[in-house]
Length: 422
Image 1 (cartoon, helix red, strand yellow):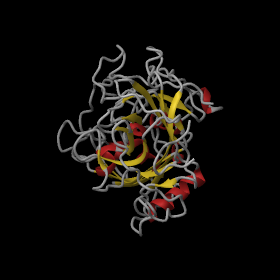
Image 2 (cartoon, helix red, strand yellow):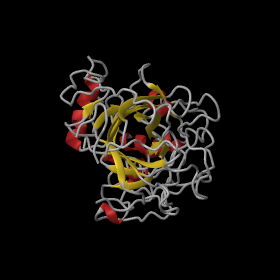
Image 3 (cartoon, one colour):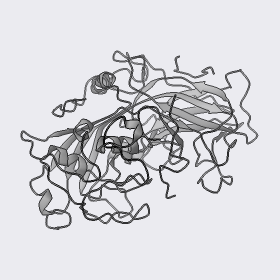
């Protein structure tokens, strides 16, 4: 579906039960090097917690219950290969091979509510909350474990169980007659009250930095340029001399609530403007899965249209001219950078480049000067971020805030709980 973020399912209003869940309880410096890997387990799955709250994996609640899990899909585990293995594989179209060392998130307040269809044209409206699983849960979506559930998106995906509900908050059973309950969840700022689901020692160190910086999501990884340097479209004059390896540490201070998500597991007819029916229907003979899914490509899109092509040049550009080994780029380095006329760290204007042809189902191929497309999202030259996108920092964060889904591809209504146009 070609979905504008300004459409019903991605625009958000300004933000302003009882848990029955196993395991539940009520500016980095640009030169900062990503924390090293390794170390003893930090407390996930029954460990000490590394200074966070210990976590106990939930049991399967069985028929009439729901098991909640979290996944960054296969791409959180394997990264984005370049060149892509096949033309259908998702890739960064500007020639970067991108891999994640860690992808840390804090999930909280997974809710089930009555009547997801209360307003056909407005998915922000639901009935009252009937059950809630409370975290917060600190999760590394880049951590693989053969004991995890199979992810909803296909082969190679994993989903780590985080909570379960066997009944409503009033003790009554969930209906198993086809009744659907609206599903929602929060991504919140990192906190020392979070349960350590699967962070190792290096992950805990990064998470403590997240707490200091108030990150809700942290990307840590490496991008290596693997495009064809003999192709002038892939390696134009304005990219020559750029580093071939860039390490990144992208802290998104973007707490967000995802409301009344569509569910690809549903088979009934959806509303005309939606891909899937909303909500979760329970089964009498076995539990159902509610998978919090985080799509990893959103912060790298070239527009605010859903499923736009991903680029890494805009981040690599901010470390051009830096000496001393592989540079580290942060989201902070994009503050003040005009997303409508993008420049590198030396002030040079840039043009779009392509090392593979981009998909064009979201929009036609962008050419000429590098200008990120906000569609009708307001632009603001300064002032408070609520009035508009001021710079590329705001633009990337706006795209990132739409990355939460249900069961792989189920779109949710997005309520941004930070200063942003909605």
